[in-house]
Amino acid sequence: MTRFKDAWEKFESDKLILDRDTRIECAKVDKEWSSENLEKVKDDEDKFVEEQMNLLEIEPVDDDEKLLFSNKFRLQF
Image 1 (cartoon, rainbow, N blue to C red):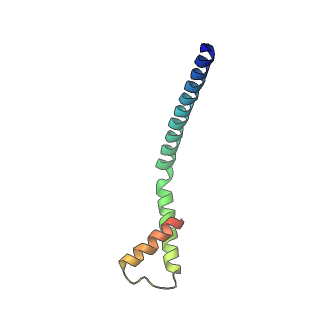
Image 2 (cartoon, one colour):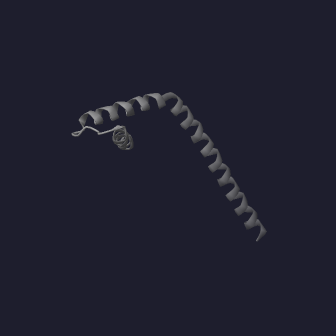
Image 3 (cartoon, rainbow, N blue to C red):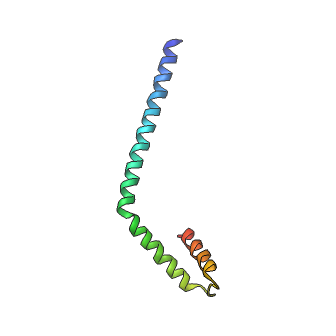
């Protein structure tokens, strides 16, 4: 019975280590991608918001309403 327990604990430990290492690697890849592409994505987002604001059929009444539309378009992007 103890051999089964030891084997099970080793199996679980190995899986946890693999999960940890995978998460660390994914975080590195995400950080690299962000540093290389974040500005481009922000520029694309700003361009999209500007285009959508120009397509509005009604003109925003004040800055609060303009911000509301802008946030809506950013979420859509």
